[in-house]
Image (cartoon, rainbow, N blue to C red; front, side, top):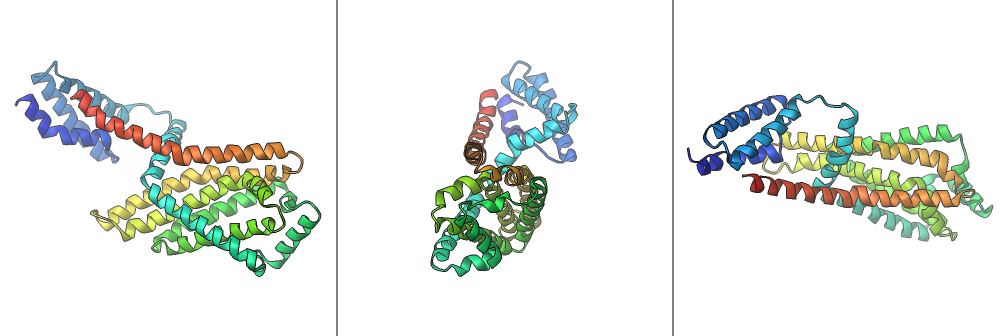
Length: 325
């Protein structure tokens, strides 16, 4: 067989192995066996060609992926947060954007409605909470609510509650995403009303610098949890050309990856809220630093880096076989 015909016959399979490596052990073993057969054939008939070099490299990479001694779990976790999670977020960037728009829309609606009707805050938080906040504002300590309670117990309580709520966002996505939409909208509205409580008393800027010590990571994680719920619902409602069960399985898998990925954000955000937010009076420079660093991290890791990584992966996939075969 001429080399050009050999390449034409097998090129699609080689590209698929390179761009979308098989995930199941059986498929991986089957692909590896076929690749070894191709390599043996190429070494026999085209020993010095670039095709042989390319197949040798791909076979070596696949061999290592099967047999190498991995440095579990640390390397696996590092790979997850360095590559898998950002690429999943990029893959579903439109859904993530939709979740963000829902949150911001209801945040703004509630913010302006609460400015016209003070009873809105009472309905969301209860009269006792609102009254206590107003008393703190009058005493010159508007965010004193964050200074109450044991720091460690506050951290653990907030962390458990936020993680529970986030998984509720995700799991409820199975009902066509409608409960997730409602809960995400409600959370956005709640933050908007909370913001209005302080803005109406002239503490609008302070609200962002204090509450977002922990709120930056917490709200980002909540939005991503909402996106995970939408992904789950969308995969079932709109399977595309795939079987519905296959599309749903893939959507659930991507959603779980996002939920696992945002767990550290909830843990750190609760830690900040329990221990650091209360320092806004005594160490404002420190809380401002945390807020700024959190905002920069969110913009880089959840927006810029996934785009950069996806473009890099796309260039590598397009250029790989073109340069080797």
